[in-house]
Image (cartoon, rainbow, N blue to C red; front, side, top):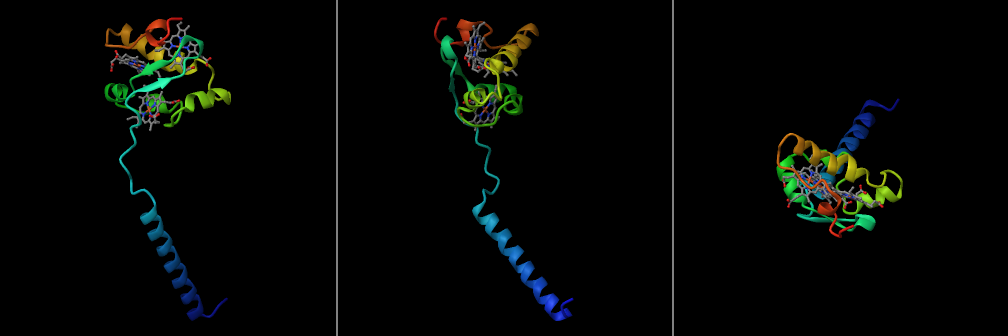
Amino acid sequence: MLPLRRRLIVLMFSLAFLAALAAAASSTGNPTPAQDPGSETLLLAGGESGDVIFPHRRHQQSLGDCQVCHSLFPQETGVIEALKSQGALEKKQVMNKLCTRCHKEFKAQGKPSGPTTCKTCHAKAG
Ligand code: HEC
Ligand code: HEC
Ligand code: HEC
């Protein structure tokens, strides 16, 4: 055991170090920025059926909950294709389990909904 005075000095240095760390973190870290809403409109790769124009902002506004989609994939451009190529998402999984499923559910409830047929969602007729 160190003498009491030495222990106090060590303790004070540790506290000063922690305070400096906290100060550094709060000055360089992002002080809770407004959440990045991403692009207003996104062009999603739709394979041989052609690209899909996705009104991102409009969905954010009408659904109100980011996690409806972003629990399946993170908030990053191109992440769906990246996860598909890694095998972490199946091809057409987002399309079938997320996009089309929701549109069909809303339609069945008589609510405004999005496209449910290939050609109305994929730009290229195919
Ligand atoms: C209806 C589905 C859906 C909802 C709801 C949704 N997003 Fe997204 N978001 C997407 C898709 C699809 C992408 C593109 C992923 C890709 O490129 O592979 C994306 C991408 C993003 C990106 C990456 C930048 C960009 O524009 O490509 C950010 C940031 C983001 N979303 C933020 C949000 C926030 C914040 C919310 C809630 C306010 C939200 N999103 C709600 C589907 C959604
Ligand atoms: C609500 C919009 C929507 C509808 C309706 C839709 N798709 Fe898609 N499709 C997408 C999106 C978004 C993707 C990219 C994400 C994914 O693969 O899940 C996609 C991906 C695809 C792919 C590429 C898969 C790959 O990775 O190779 C093909 C092929 C495809 N769709 C065919 C179809 C066919 C055929 C139909 C009709 C039976 C259809 N889609 C209906 C939105 C849609
Ligand atoms: C949880 C429900 C939900 C999910 C998930 C969802 N949508 Fe929609 N979508 C809607 C609703 C509701 C509307 C109609 C009301 C509106 O436009 O806000 C709509 C409208 C649309 C429209 C038509 C916009 C217009 O101009 O008329 C497109 C295109 C579309 N969605 C594509 C997609 C694609 C692609 C995905 C998947 C990446 C997707 N949606 C995921 C609920 C959803």
